[in-house]
Image (cartoon, rainbow, N blue to C red; front, side, top):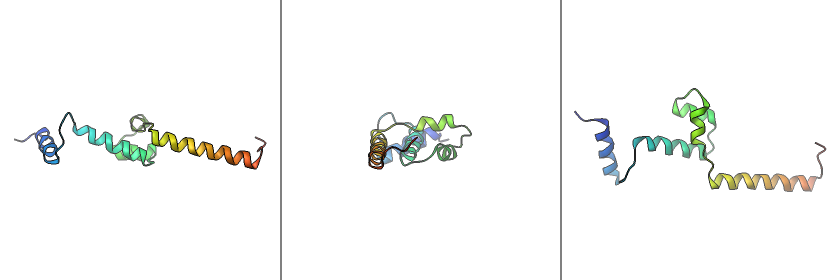
Length: 89
């Protein structure tokens, strides 16, 4: 009888993946990439089959690309606020 671990080991060998790579790493990578692509917490929860946001938050890592994007948006907002003058709020 073949065990699922044997299937994973065979798949890794076929793909040329060596080292300490676990099957769960695929799930983590896929959900991290989905988060980086803009998936919401609800979308991540649906992908993972979870009913709480706790697990989804694990995959919403702050990446330098995302941090730069946020900084750029903030810079844009400040520039527009300066051009438009005080908003009164």
